[in-house]
Length: 370
Image 1: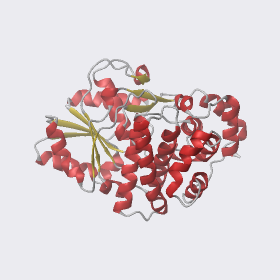
Image 2: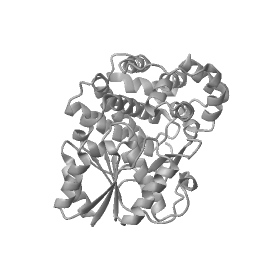
Image 3: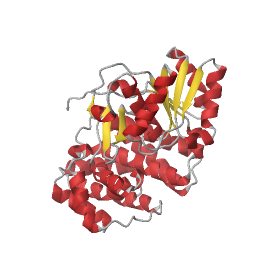
């Protein structure tokens, strides 16, 4: 038995049409003025108008900040925080993909705490109170709605910082698969594969425990049952619901454990070559699974996850990734030493079940980039 310090999850409202329950959620918090943090794409899709209509009908004021960007930087968080300080909300709502939720969480750090996001890299460093936070994902991938970390990029270097605090965890997450219908196919593909990587990495990381393992196992089975239809662009509402639910449970698994080498090696690819996170982690994941499979205890976990599949895990994984029809980015092999050095400093790598050193990381990059 391993010691466990668990934060199981927010209250999760799952099901088609449950966005309509947003006013009731805010009423339980006594909220009168919500700031919705989102991006222009979610506004253009009409989702924000629906949410604000529900709130207005219930007598709750809604203000919208639509300045979220992919891979939010410290400056992006400060812009959102400055806006929030000017309108004085009593609750924050992250509405959109992981970037919108990270922007909302980051904003919450700076509303009543001094400094910049770099000051909160780590966990539990925010001394002052935060506003109640609700999360409404419109993509099925990041699981940010169930995590107390804001992932923010440093200005200039684009280094990803994990800034976490128990006060930053959403009180309520609304999982409405109707909201994921507006995703472009490219986004649905990348976020689905990201969710798959979260389930697989949290299932075997060194911080896994009984609670996180229950989340990662159920997340994997939900995602595996839906991902091929999602990648093919043929997912119906029920299938998109399984993917959305699985992504959230994978987020719960991360919140109660950690990730591993696939994310540690993916982040430098994004920072150095601007490769989307979902693609970067997908490039690395099969090679990391193969590496981890060398540990008998981990191989047993993989076999358990694959019990309902039609092939061993690594074969199924590679077959599934092929359905995405990715074109591998052309990255010079001469970049591997720089990438390996950067990956060796990524926090998630410390929790990989097979220990990482410079040689191991280099081998992973050689396999993925050749």
